[in-house]
Length: 332
Image 1 (spheres, helix red, strand yellow):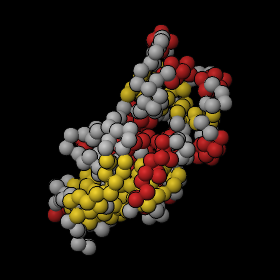
Image 2 (cartoon, helix red, strand yellow; image 1 turned 90 degrees about the horizontal axis):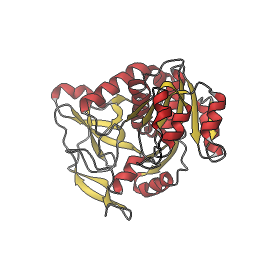
Image 3 (tube, one colour; image 1 turned 135 degrees about the vertical axis):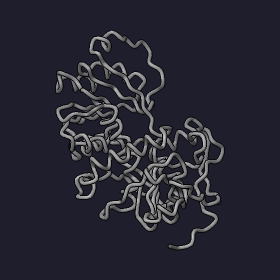
């Protein structure tokens, strides 16, 4: 293995807030403790959480790196325990609670996933956060069954495009909402049964016409007033799972009665502040269920664009405009 340097370059946030800027800084290379792997980062995924963190709205959990970046792909160059030396030189990807926008990053051993041989580094970096989030929401929280009907808001996002694939592989029916004709086409090509452009029609009315019994599972990163619209198309005993609040953190004039009548459930979920043990269980469950589809090509992340890591600001601006279809990735 090549020698690991003492210093590395990272993307840091200057003046966190609405006028924040991304700058390149030199930091010490972290050293792995027992149970950790040091990854030479080849690519890192870009997530909306990164935009929130640089604005000061989404700080890392206590004790975690304050460097942006929640998912990495790269080569294991150091291990924290001699028993883990089998990992040295392996190509892996996985989720981190912070530190991904750097030339080196720490990854919990139990969060590491072997990179499929046919995948590029960009694909691997695009997979971890999105597939694990989608798996958690659909299967661990939503208890997805093969005959379920699933509604995905932001269907062309990283999580949305991942959830389409996972749900279809599990035998479910899938509807999505998106805001552009190109996104409608992309979601249908991925396997979605219904794709609704919310700028052209009311999604609740259109979905009710197609699914009179409603959606069993609704994955919603919008929240706000969408909650009331979700209730209109929720099946009896269905569940709404909110995993972001892009549409706002409050709901005005929300009538609980229709929700109550349907015996509906509302779950709010975030992955970043979960324990290492929870993430290890999640990673193992996902790999057991979907390692084969990843290896044989039936399952792969939808990649929007890859950028040199020095151009992270460009990637962030693309995400701010909501014009990406699939994942944005930084190449190191």
